[in-house]
Image (tube, rainbow, N blue to C red; front, side, top):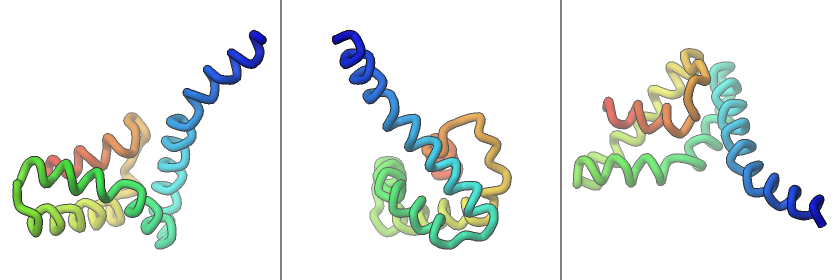
Length: 98
């Protein structure tokens, strides 16, 4: 019974850690020029970034343009990601600066 409880606690932590690991792997692949990794990262995070930017700008078309600028910056600067934060935090930081 303790094993089942320990496994259920471990399962609650794993998805977030796996997601962050997967995001870091995507960033590394993007730094190597992998367009499929870029697409995967975009699909995973674009809605969150759009909502974040829209909450700041209050303009849909501007928010859409800024999302594109964020991911262009990621494509150009992925080799500069040093892993001190989660990828999602890094993306939101780029969005805020844009």
